[in-house]
Image 1 (tube, rainbow, N blue to C red):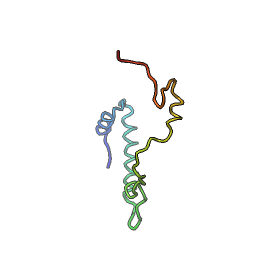
Image 2 (cartoon, one colour; image 1 turned 180 degrees about the vertical axis):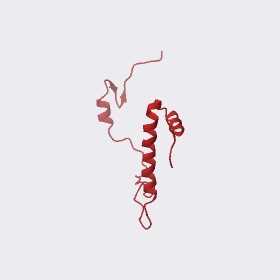
Image 3 (spheres, helix red, strand yellow; image 1 turned 90 degrees about the vertical axis):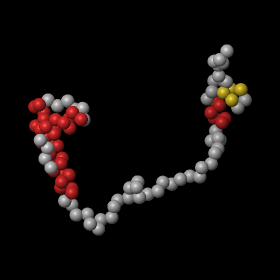
Image 4 (tube, helix red, strand yellow; image 1 turned 60 degrees about the horizontal axis):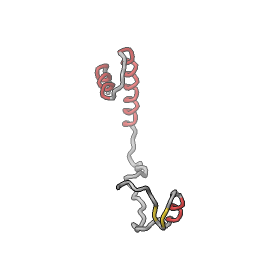
Length: 95
């Protein structure tokens, strides 16, 4: 696959990349080079090569869904400027 200047101009517009006319030729050559590498990868014979382990083949480890309070109430209340028992004290906002 080979790109022409018009296609490169359209790709630049879709990607919102501002290219001057002088830069279009060099960008077209670079894109064609990248597409050439992709064509080389398509020619590699991968028959008999097992797929690498990825996220689609592994299942996530899940923990038991248990409701708890985190058991750190005292440490959290120690950070508050004012407390009243096991609660935060905040200024009254509604009269």
